[in-house]
Length: 305
Image (tube, rainbow, N blue to C red; front, side, top):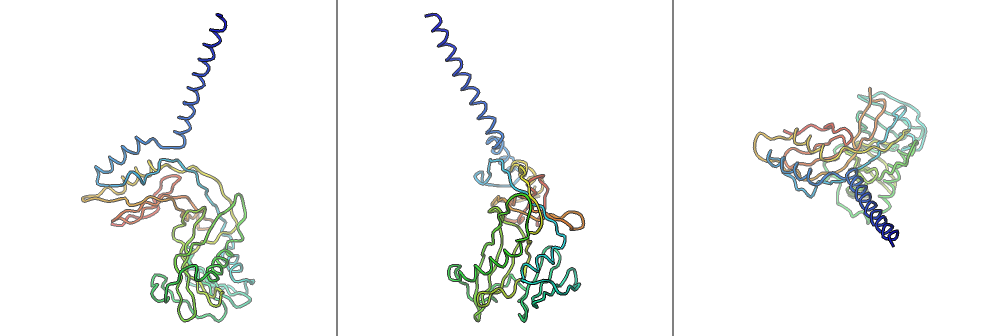
């Protein structure tokens, strides 16, 4: 009897110990993956006292990992031009701040600073240069009304990134921001995402005739030779501390309207190599968008005064 009572007591102690260990492990894992709610609450209150207002609900407590993509820009222009134009490069000419490449089939690609480019098939007239003036491009169409056009544009822009190789899968997508039709020609405005997250500063307008992309211009980073690795992001608590430092207003109030993940381009050295860095985009009502490097918290954008 005595032995049975001791065994029961030991079993109870063991169960209690397992419970304590399980709770401790759960709390440890939670703290590793989530920011303490109380810390976020306190920071939101402190920011409000300084005139920076944000809805507590837009602040994610989850600590995130995201992929960093590294690219080698060696022979970038030739590689992309041949993939887009479907032929080998015949001639290369220097132009202000860039290069003009003429392909053997007569198609042309211009590349200038910060991934600005212009593509034209042989005999195509110049594309109107102002992407912002969307009224020029005619009547808006629903995306489902131009499935062939959308497929042609996605295939065209996707061609330029088919040279990517290296560690990990690169899940990039072309997003359709608008379609217009004018005099039998369709114009498609595109942005892009990677891993479902927007890449800032990538916007291109494609001209489509009879289901073929005959011209394109804008800013677009095509993916060539490269590699990738996973990195833990700086949590939003530290990013918001930086926001507080950069946005302390002299008077009045500033409202933080949204907080989103995004990707931004970052160059190494003399722009020989570049990478896509995970970032946090903080949108405010009167100071515009602030984009922070999500790994080290560096502010990438200038504040609007």
